[in-house]
Structure formats: structure tokens, C-alpha cells
Image (cartoon, helix red, strand yellow):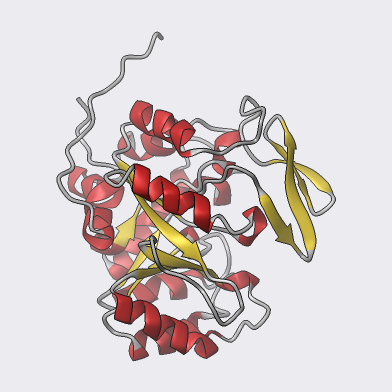
Length: 293
């Protein structure tokens, strides 16, 4: 039996990738590869030959890695996946929370979703203060916002304004504040506000050059803890893109094996904080699946 309740606060799903980057299409071409605006990239593990990034494949990884539940965010490079992720939420309500995707147009629908994803660093208008009506609508609905900011401190002032105007709105800042860029600590400091949390989706990507067991990533977690408190930090994997070089289990294991984190800190970071933020209930550590090795 695993000792940890584990919740992944940052994953992606799609049946068919149909996104855009810099105005150019992003589409799957097979064997886990995608045409990324004219350049072929390994977007998924190569054994996913049909490029279908489904909930069932993620659930198999979650069960093996001992991950209880996850939160599906979205990205413009994958295309709007609202219809699919809302079906996933309906089919697996105890294991998934899902975000609708905000796009720069007047209408968006929160129906069937738990939150709204904003890829702030990719917006044509980088001034976040113009999103006040959007934030107010999500706050009124009782849902949360998942937001990936531009690198460093570029959008911190704008988000700080929105936090002040919407004090009861739950906000999860993604990619651990883009921790390897200058000024990342200013993003983390926003979590000093009561309802603002930080999730670590993409942490292994950001420290990819160092690779497993990512000691500098653990150090960054400790630095963030000292800024806003461990109770404001949540684990995220950025599945499936980060799984091109590591397994899903490794994305959890490097934290469990770390000697720099206390047991209480591991429990908080891996799942307890996310349970509180996303409203998961009645979770218990999953039984461990024996490995043939």
C-alpha cells in the first residue's frame, strides 16, 4: 500500500490534437510525434502510435504510479478540448477535475467544467487587467482558474490586481512560476494571498537538463515553501509531454525518495493541498501494483 494520497494538478488530454502555435497548426503525425508549426516534435511517448492521448491511458498510468486523481488543464497548442474533457469528467467523476479553455472571444462555457484554464503567456493582449469580467464570472460561479503566466514577473502586477478584485476566487498558478526564469519568485509570492496556490506542472521539463532525480527541482520547492508556505504548493506532472523521457511513476518517485522533504511536506505537496483546493473527497492511498522487476 502506498503511503500517500496523490493528486496531479496539471495534465492534458485529447482524442485528437488540433492546435496552433504562432498561427501555425499543431497536429499529430503518429508514433507520438506532432507537427509543431512546421517542426516535428516528440509530443508523447512513441508507443502511443495513434497519438490519442485518452483518459483511459492516463488512468492506467495513474493506477500504476499510485495517483488518486488529476486535474485536466488545457493548452492552445493542443486545440480546444472542452467537449472531450467534459465527457471524461462525466465518466470518471471521482478521479478527474477538468478545465474549460479560455480563448480571446466574448463567449466561453463553464458548464460541465470545474474551472477555467487561461494560457496567459500566449494571449495576444498581455495585460491581464482586461480579464476582470472573466475572473468575476468564474468567482461568481464558485469555480477556479488555472493560469500559466508569461515568464518571470511580466504579468505578476496584472494578476495581483485581479486577485485583489476577486478575493474569494481560487487561482492555481501553473508551471511552478516558470521556476527556471528570472523573477519566478514573484509569481510564487502571489500565493501569499488566501485563495492562490502554485502547481508544479512541467517541473521535470524545466529541470530536464539536470534530469532524474532533479535535486535542483526539490531545492526550488523548498525555496517556494519559504516564500508562501508548503500548504500552498501542489504537485503536477504536465502529462503526457514530460513522459517522453521519463515514466509517469518517476515524476512522483523523485519526490517520495527525496531526503530534503519531510514526510509532512511530501503529503501536503503530493495530495493534501490539492484535495483542499480542487474539492476531492474520500480519497485513500492506492494499493501498490507489484513490478515484475
